[in-house]
Image (tube, rainbow, N blue to C red; front, side, top):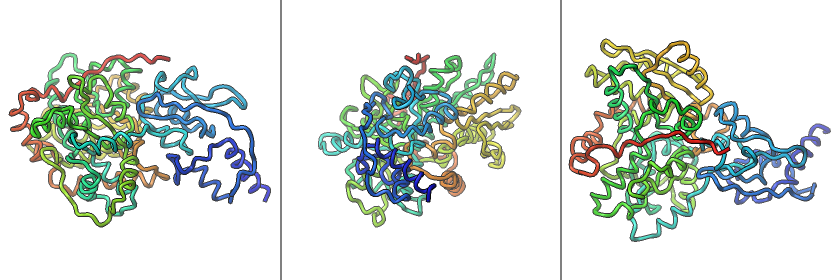
Length: 496
């Protein structure tokens, strides 16, 4: 009894300084403090006192900090320091005045935060959550003079099915298309098309770099959090960072150019929304290099959790809905676009396509066993014709130290994939909250099963991509040189 009483008292003390806004909280039904209160049969506020006033920090383009909900567990500090290696958050002051904040206790936009959102995933109470764009999207959905376009990646369909409690998540994308149509979107596109283009252009870059003297590694730049980390902490590698945009931004720029031309509307008449498993995509959509003539490639980014709220808000019956295909010309994709959602998957897709372009044959998938293993740093060597291609995969930014050590010892890597979130996009901070590592394994299993079962495994065999490269790009003078698929990166100073 004394132990139970002590546990109950500790939770009651936490609740005494906690705002009672559970109904409106992001973590409602997923809050660990809420579950503890229920488990310990706490039915009233027995301990009352003066609550510490804390400010609401909305300065970041991706993450909101509600310090009043913080219980000082320190998880965000640890994940940022030990797994992400940014140290954007730390304990400030002592005693009753202790709180968690950025350097010099300034707003989050002054910090070294790379917007990965892993702190959001580990926060037990909702003191950290993504910046919401639902209200903005709703406003535009009601505008009749705008074309409302939406894109989503393969991980989104799986994540939505998981969040809504649908068991058969593998083939949920066509049902999701119908749901989005009912919500009010005019055009629905697959971010997988952008992934296929991303893989294709990375392979083209690798082939152009052959014979380079001295040889330089090519770092994949599809992860926006990793790109910001490189700009802030390792600017020396920026010349070796692939200039190919992320799949989201490639799809977004095609919507504002190719699709706008086909629909005979101006780019500013299209409201382009992206649904992503990644919170950092909210920040990426606002980068300087992600707009043309002052018009953003992507206007608004929602997480999977936000889209699930929007679906519930519209009262759509997701179990009894007719399936629909996505809209042309950005509908089809190869299984490489699905594979890219796991750590090492993008590098594997690149090697598959490079091997096929060089030999005319598909590579044996057993060759990728080493890249599919667990661990924060993995490497493999692939023999393509008379050349050996050495690939490194960094699974989580805490694996960068192993990469640096290997490079310092003289090991040269032709291709390096870095994923900020361990496990890849299937562990993105915008996906449903998971309570165990088993849930992550299920997500990875679905990805590999999809890759094995689909007929089109290479981007160059996708009818959508063939039509895009051989016809549509050539017909549109504005995008025929493919410069729209590339961006630039530059050293970024951390303000504090």
